[in-house]
Image 1 (cartoon, helix red, strand yellow):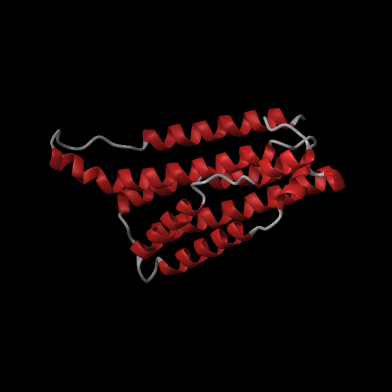
Image 2: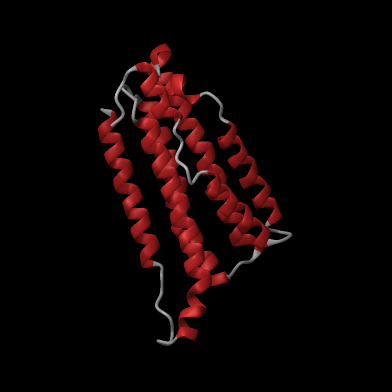
Length: 197
């Protein structure tokens, strides 16, 4: 399979995930400002989840710009990432119905933590598939932001049982950390003379 086909499949799955998230938004019970304000917490949760899905998709795109070869391990690692991302609509619905309480907020952090693990695994399998000539390996360099994100998700998971709002603040902080896309791969391609797609 060519990397372009894997990218197209990933784009399709992520589009479906976002569509499901949108369908989870319920209309206010009354057509007033007060009715709209009752939806405000859920809309904020939706915005955070949308941002997180977008950040994973964006960084996936940047990482695959220089990929020339994939194998079965890459396919499974990519599916593992998509599995965790596909749970986000369930998580935001749970938070939307239960409110900002410990277990749903912790579970959201657990999903993000596992998605971060899956992303790192995908990175490693891409490097293994391409061997010594791997553009991903050449571009990866420091994984500081990735490890800060994973650690923050783990802290937020535990903190949810003490203060769910603290966990939400940590999730927002990690999203802001990644708001500027991961440019390591573009810089690596420029150094190697390849052209990003």
